[in-house]
Image (cartoon, rainbow, N blue to C red):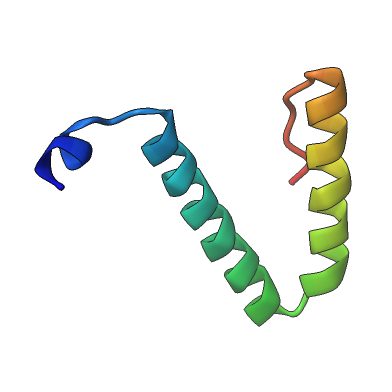
Amino acid sequence: MNGIRKKKGPRERGLFYANSLLARLGSDLVAGKSWRGLWQFLDWSQMRQTTGISRRND
C-alpha cells in the first residue's frame, strides 16, 4: 500500500478531480440548480472531449 500511495500519478489526480467535481455537483444540488447544471456540464464535458477546447461556462 505504501508504494502505491507514494506515487502521485494521473490516477490520483483524476480521483481528486472527480472528488472536487462531486463536491461541486453536491453543492449545486443543495443550491437547487441541480439537474440543469448537470446536463449543462455533461454537454460541456462531451464537447470538450471531442473538440479539445477547455473553457469554463460558470
